[in-house]
Length: 299
Picture (cartoon, rainbow, N blue to C red):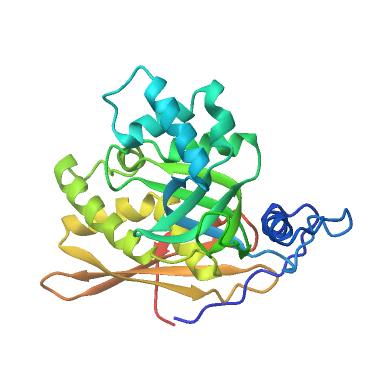
């Protein structure tokens, strides 16, 4: 699968939080004062879009911040909470937000740190805290939408990985999402089996950094298109299984960047192949469906 070029839509570059954060750390190290002229400028023009699926983890950038949190835990009235529960419960309290603002937020995929997340506004801090609260199922995911900046300096949290300026952070709750996908023609038990199997396959496909057009289209559909799981359940009822998912540059791509995502289902016994596809527009920061799920015929 070839990766298409990233969007080239011109975007304003002043006050880029990702680059400002990296420059501030470098200036602190060298003792240089940041000037008004170069504050917020960005060497990347424009910053590429990111649409990624994974998990968020908070890290303490210094020992003093970690010790301050430990003192808050000691003073709390909930000693029986797990580490993750205590972290969310204590730092989500308004009087403790001062400490939450000083944490480093690491976005990981399959346990591998991929990005350092930079909140774009006060509301993003609340979303980040919500993202680290205990999940009801390991199938829950955090969706990160934003812009990919430069590599973070090691002083930030000890990881030299790219920073992402967060514009939207959403928690996908698997059970709630699947309730909207179940077709009436399929029983609950059969749907649950087909949906979980298909979702696991889509999450395998979503093991990517979410920074190419094709990956952004795949990641978007995995968590925003319940029709995938409705169709998979109906195919499962007929003895078909999802065997491949392919992202192709649409022939409709001209002024817009459109990706056709083809889903191939194969009969378990007959080996008959049936294909369906969805078109996704990934020209801008927020992808959207252009053509709903429909039969696909090889050209």
